[in-house]
Length: 300
Image (cartoon, rainbow, N blue to C red; front, side):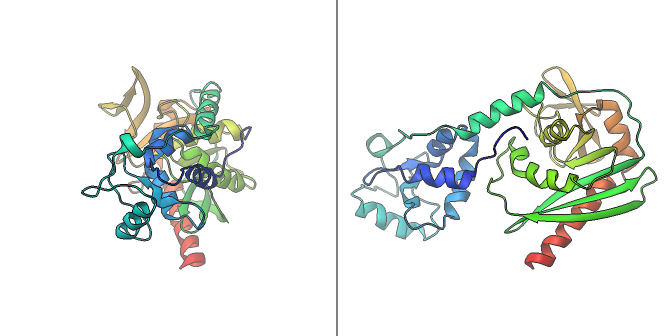
């Protein structure tokens, strides 16, 4: 990939351990220490899953001073904070008095943002693309990430499909999906023979024009198309998605299609339309079905 994907769970736990007794921090403050406040919700999720007794997750509260979001229960959290000598009035803590945000950190998310800028500079948006086989990729999550790959011919017939499962230590953070799913997609691509890959995620329809489909396409040097179920950004004019004055994708049915790498907007939308049997292009839909089947088989 050219960049090391950090274990964001361990990074979060290390930051939380820096909060001294008698002080508290917030989910947003830890997210900023990771490099981007957009990760605040993910910080809460990771702390909720914390397996270590020595990580004082109870010292992390909401940005408005509210106490909440503790796996052991709010009352237990309040009891532990009071034992630390922290005053709580009407369920809130005075952050002017007790806030700790002087973290020692190398801001891993900031480094990943820089990687996205680098990837965006390498994205190619070519026009028409000749192809015979198309692949679809999707990932389903449980305790593990279960990725699926399906190959189809130009008539929509399934040629083959297979799956991989692996542990992922990077939570879902909006606009950082590539760093969560790239290890899975790279493993899937090892045996792929498709001329073009459809990915469940955005391409250039991304704040930095480096969504999952673009990132994967650049890393593997393969033409890619992004397929998203929700509109991440931009405005829709007729069927075009406009962002910063540029057409970055097309609304096709109920999904949002954007070129990933080595393909143009119109070509990406045309290919997607050819595979719209239901609400999602078939290569991605079939990969989605296979990924969920694998997750159920392995995890129940």
